[in-house]
Image (cartoon, rainbow, N blue to C red; front, side, top):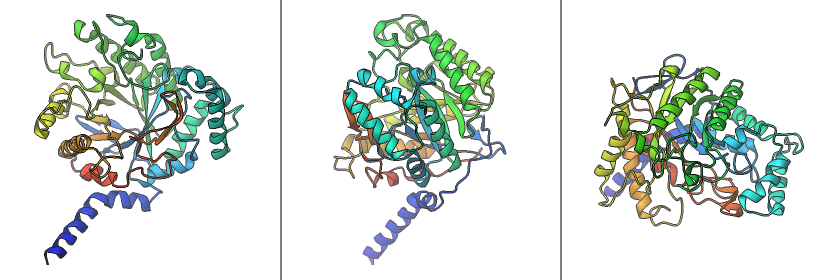
Length: 432
């Protein structure tokens, strides 16, 4: 009898956690919500006023090739179909300012020009280019541009009912992030230093945002634009002048994006690599001026097991949750000047090699705690990331990504146990 009871409990848990996935897998003909989206208080709503909960997957397109990853292994149609089948309703598609300022770069040029900055051979890149074209024969490498590929990705996602959020991930195309990669803080801001700001050209960033916002007007599935991924101060930047640069440049960028494309949500991350909004309610308690995009504002936050802002020295989930709330989660409190939707646009774990269904003990503890926190506030989210490998990373061609949701060849889940680990995050449990 006890054995039967356990089996019945397991059956109920499976239904609770996997029904959203199984339903979506059976129905690949989902449709986009009524667009455009807008916001009120802490909620994202569609054009009819119904709540939309973002359940997103990140898809990297910000590396040296200026292309979404994985096309050397699978077609765009296969990858967009896979996303639609898993229960996701949006993609956070990353891009670089380099990409935004070079709309005419052909696929031939994309791979030949990427070899040197990626630290791999021209022969390796040529081999990858041939694989991309073989699996995506609609690409004419002499004529098709990187922007054309992005457009095809966005349009096929939209055809399958999947929304896209465009994320300006870096200025110089390449891996992110550290305090020496030159992409961290505006070069026009206070306390310029070469290590953190040499590629983050403020004028080029604004020009790139405007170009992408204008391009997105013709793409029905694009519902939001993230102004900048993981801004991070170093030495005298940021905290020394009360984050004046953050207030100034995020406002300027948000105003520009909204003026160019009034339909998209304007998504703003905090400082310290999108982990810290504390300055909104402490010290001078100064709110970012979002009046230029009223009804379109969304906050975004990142959290990993290694995030310095959220340490866990005592292995105590309650303490970690308190830090999530202290530095970012408080924006969900309704009726405040800073109230707004909170989009946890990056979180993730290593997918294999550990004893806890593939996860190591630290990541397992972190994920269970984060899932519990997200279940309690029913916030929007985006998991990092789809790519099981990269065209090139760390000076290796076709480099494996053990944090990828898909396996190396993008044929399926790297860790089939992972979707159930997100538990009730898949479901919408709260309403305005």
